[in-house]
Image 1 (cartoon, one colour):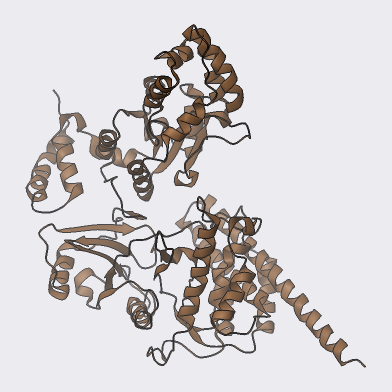
Image 2: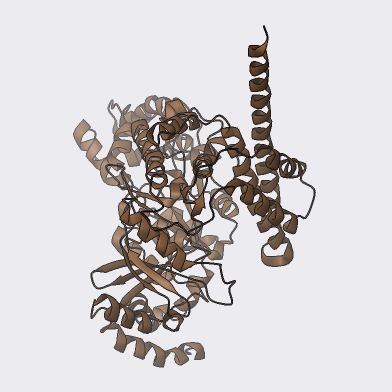
Length: 625
């Protein structure tokens, strides 16, 4: 056997990993050691970086297998054992089963035709009108361990797909009892008009993912489907046992798929922190000791201030730090963020328990702070799919109520009188973002030019001053999974003293986004009443009632300002992208979004202009005899 030199050079390293793995809880170390010492996985260290997509079958992988259910159905209905699968095999491509899978028959039509075919196979009359319903009910909810695996894979930047042979119901809907947003790509046979094991449907999935066959892994429980995938060059896992198959997938990918911390991944290159220094700091400062060592993952968000999940013994914490490198004196102010969170926590705002602030850069290279990890739900999609209408309404009411709580904090009592400037907050923001936009301007955006001229002329005359969050939106809150109460408000980096209505307007940005905006799913064209999501007008009324604030007559101004600010930010992204920091496709997308945001902002400015005009006319008319 001719063993590659690369593998021989790894042996000494793997031996040292084995020695330390027993004294430290290092999943990656144990896995690497196991992989390196197994001849059948000599080259597996390269596969993690080659794999760009993982494709999952539905029944038998993401859902329970239909095969045991079929046998149970036959037994319960008194149908001769094996009739159903013998019938499918007997009638082959001309039978009703493949026609169901490619959408030529719907579920109701299939029930009639399939009953006739099975009667021929069984040599007696059999009735299977409810067979598909039985399968759907029996397969039940998605297997939690598999969904955890999908989330863990996506967190590492690898794409995921669901490739399924399914069917259409009589109302035109298809069998997908899964939240499709979990996957990057979903390919349904009943929609595509092609079913597995036809190679065309595999290539359709690969094209949608934008990957080559050799860069993908496919999991399925049917041999013929696996055979075709292998012939195309796709690496395959034949699923016969879910835990064993997931363990095999872990070996290939070289990271854990079990119960991942949501939105985390392995620490990015260049963002590593000294485990030795951090462990020593925790021991000395928090008086926590453990023999299991540190477990560290990095959150996918927190690009500005790197954010990590830390597990040490029984402690589960989040670490936020300034990024490495040379920084402006006021940038990435971790100390400021820690201060306002401490004050808000003391005032009764739901904030994670803060553990420690370290301003000594010699520990981890830059200042950082630790807070307890809060386990709960973070909702990225403002439409809150797959939940009852009353739960959506409760979540949005709690979102608004928590903002009232923040804005009700007494600045003097919280010792935050020097946390920002008093008055003229919006004016200063308009000046700042106008300057920022001009500095990054790449092409003429007429709506931005109009807003830059219009906003200073229509500034609010009476601003109150409170602690504003600065980035208050649904996905910066953690909710209790059952009661829906807000457990924590996160990301206080932009917090300052300012106009509370700026937070309220920013909270409502998704209400006015069209559905085709890639930033996040918009609600502008949705039936919010049917969904149970309060309108922005309803949320504003709720806010004003709870804060004893007069109804906001110029809210259109604040929405215009909010979209102007977002457009300025996107224009900055566009300019940096054009300078070579992202692909041209990304640059074009950011530029287009900046224009769209500016257009929405100018639309609000026009509405505000009409309101002012109508109010002026009413005043004039009242003054006439």
